[in-house]
Image 1 (tube, rainbow, N blue to C red):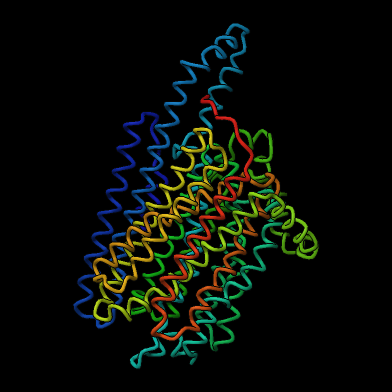
Image 2: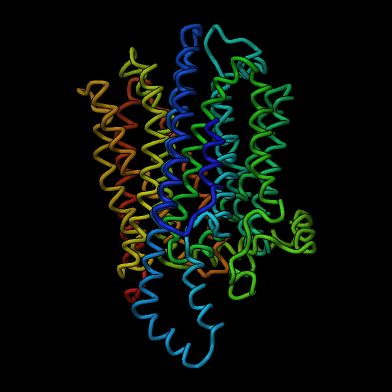
Length: 567
């Protein structure tokens, strides 16, 4: 039901009047929230008859996912209002003289073109570029949900059964699970990301490339339902990582081309998939109770495949006017390609040998820029901090507050989905506002530096030894609100630091850095259990500080940009 609310929020027609559009969007979001409360109430009722902690996660997801959908609707309404104001300024300010000159020269087509130039930048849901962004977001939600769902299908307690727990059915240990959850995925994902960047740079239709990759990993997830041994499952997870490596290099450069004036905001909207996908993944524990882990894999595979297939349907989404006219690099990313272009995309796997020869050359070019190098280094430290929190925070909380595990499950789910979504969107919007005021591409790097500086002490206090559980959750909430604002601005700055025809390769390198992010959580696993909380507390704070310093270095190395003028 929450999925229907999200789709409705992303597909409702947009009226030309700002007030009507806003009311329609908010009405849709309210409906999604109402459905979320219904789902949460159902989960609470189930808690009475269930001994496991599944309803708590379901309740948190039922509340957080529709709230995030309403947030997305609000961003679209706000952005559309800003575009309408710019169009009015075009007609009444600087653009008036231009339009009068055009009218005097009897060029009505040029006048219409000038109006369309601004109209192409709208955030209306009727805009082809916004429809494309929504499709990419849906694919990314499926990406993150399929990646995380295995985490909710294991149970190492004595009560585990083969029907409900993968580890019990396939007989693997917690250490083997650790390999499956981290390096079993990130090693093939990292290597494939470099190749995927080259594919994305050459692809004529990046939306369809994302859709094809989504169908690939969906098929792999479906095959996991048939896994008969741990080595088989490990190989399937690695293959899923190879397919999922194509998502970011194909999607984010396309977003940068479709939203040149709002790269950070659009990237932040795309980044909502991390939080929404994680929220949906937690429903895997709920489905496991009735369908078992094999049935749960099939449900997630079907949902992901449905979202991915939308990118291959002709007429859904569409090219911008510049793409249709074949102007500039954006022309290579037209949403609806010809039959020959689609056939070319389907034949891409046959070009692996040729593309592999260019991978290292493209990666070297994508890392030749000094600002890009600083951003890569800063992001590596940031990934280390994020993955360490993801892997070890539950264990640290279980040690420090053993009586509050159920409450932590609810608070943590809500903080991730709601606070994480709010922070991600706010970061993108703020970075674009700073860029519009003359800071150029360095705005995103400066914003990321400020975010990391604020996050370091908040995280340190989250695991303070003298804090109550409520106090710890309060600091965790504050930490998420400032820390998760970094991704959109960082990606936008990176896209501005590399040549336009190497943005796919740059994003492939950026995605590959997630593999290095596993170094810190792996190192923390070597600590004694009594030292884990303090080690996590200090190491993450240090990584935040190092990340901030590197982002400052990136900002300082960007060339000075001239202030932008309104159209």
